[in-house]
Image (cartoon, rainbow, N blue to C red; front, side):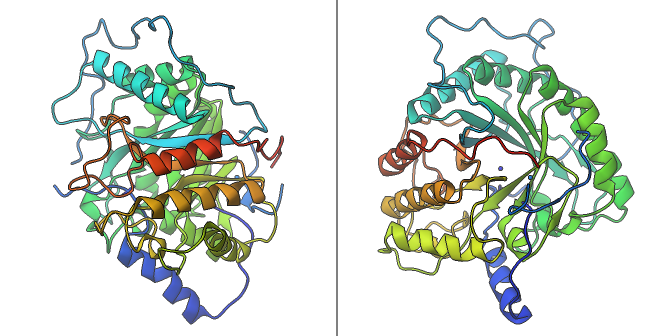
Length: 411
């Protein structure tokens, strides 16, 4: 499935690196649920340094609804303490696919309020809205909205709900992988026939969403996620420059964990996030201390010490046996093991605090789900955490801890 870039990797044999970095792709360590059918200078970002397709014509809601929001009901929940620069981002990736039978605007606002209330109860102060866009194949030059892509106007309505509740908001379009033959093919291995045409198509798709994000004062917009094969391409310069003219917030990029540790991520953006699914080869009975060590072993390959310019844009793991070996595996459904998931969340939070990171966004909650209802383990992804009491307890302990954040940072 589905929700990135810094110091140089310590040198070790190429054969070992190849083996380590290839295994996760077989196991599905780039988790996006798959279903068939600034004007800032260019930065070589470094964590140790000062990070079914088809065109959409817009919202299908009535013109009376488009661009408007229903009044917030009395007693609307608010985050305990609104995020400010320097504070940790305690967040969740909310993944939003439009249903085949389109939900009304009233429904999506009510659903957003339900999630806002749930997240406030966990102590969250941030939310990232991830949603799919589509390509026709690994060499396609065309990117577009599809039937599962929320329109810009529907995004506006949901953003407003979270902003009214005081959340830090991120808009995060992410390439759907259905046409890429996963798990062998994924968004990180695409090779467009014409990169210039690909970037032109991407800009056309993104612009309406950037406009809405700016109008609704979203804090961040993720310009790309896990696009390993395109990182460093000169086409990003013009795309990011255009985005920064349209959107006044933070323009970010989210790198996959493998590329993050393998070398410098050269992207012309103001912030780097990492989709962090580091495999740790330990038994299910491993202590949280051992899990923390496993994460630090990976991070030390990139940079030892504090990482105050890095956000974990995605972190999570399946609540199942064997998940430590492949945290992002959403293809398999091994025996349910809630303790594995809860211990992992606890350990990752400790790493965020020890390394003085900017925060973490847990993967994930599906927009149409009721977060207060336990997941159906016959059909739901093992990565789902809402409704799993042990993991919810770990999340709340993390989000309500006394970690003050990395402090105000500059690139």
